Image (cartoon, rainbow, N blue to C red; front, side, top):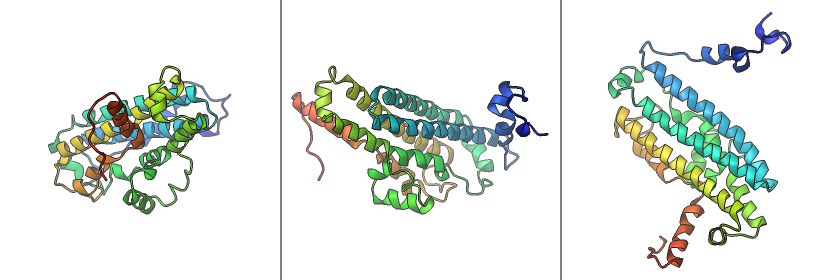
Length: 261
């Protein structure tokens, strides 16, 4: 009888059994004999586990916003921001592998690339990046993961703005009256923090890539820096949360440039 065949009552409910460590750790395998590939695999495994948690929480957050439970939704969105902060720190760990070490086994990675992560793209779609990033992003996503956008018709972005509409509030109104409308104010600030953390994560990912392979090198996924990674730096989920701050500044007497046509 295997462990999986045992009932919960019969199996020893301990740390290894609860976390299924025998299964989890056995999935870590190298495709090259280079010792530094172990770090490469570990970092990406850990990131995928965090993406799984973000997806799990996003499903809850969207439902909570639709139920107008702003407090719990905001709390969980804050968790996502903290996870993204932690995920960003993984790049500095990966940078303890030298560019020379990476070059010695990179050619044996069989085209594997982080841009092929379905979970990462699912996170983007669930938050609503396809609603703001433009047609090129939508076409690329549909080509690589057909049906992914359609599988998530309800996005965090959509639920966020519908919550504001239900309360007959605009971003500007809420920030001007932030202490009486603190629930919406905190919701907006936390959404901004998720966007900010994503942008920081992307920027540091680019710096890590430049450090490891150079800016003119083709990535293992088959794209050059300027053809893919450079285009991601302008991605934002909630551009409105950035733009309306210009109105706050102008209202306070500050000088603001005219918006681009």
